Length: 222
Image (cartoon, rainbow, N blue to C red; front, side, top):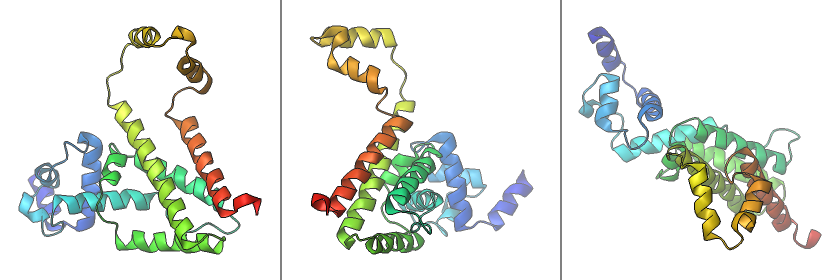
């Protein structure tokens, strides 16, 4: 073990720090991730990390940036419509966030994006402009999809961390609360649409955004 730690100490890099932090995030969650714990995982003292990462926020920003990039940013592929691209990007981004414990919360609280991410983001905006978007509409479209996906996954991941309430007890509480009892609209809606979280709910919201964007791009059917 001592030899392994000595080897890690000598080969410590910024990339290794971020990769290890992401692995530790999956184990302990965002609240359990500390610089001291990360240093112990790497087999070094905490001050050694500050040669590579100046502050904990900088570490969190780097981790968030790594997650965002792992979704595969970039303009549409050859022959891919902007609608197809937007849906593919959103699905990939959701998958990247779900791949890490508290991934959405980490990205939501990130301060800055890396140079590579900003460059790819500009390429995406430029591609949408070529598809007929104004720069402003392109910006709002991509950020809306990103914010929707981050918020949606944040709710999904928060729900996973909550202890389940006994269904019978919860149903009894709601039934007594609503005038319609078991026939109240909320129960009908839940029977019809299912959970407001999960794959189907995410896809519905994504379709709404794409449809609304098409309407903004071609107002009055033009």
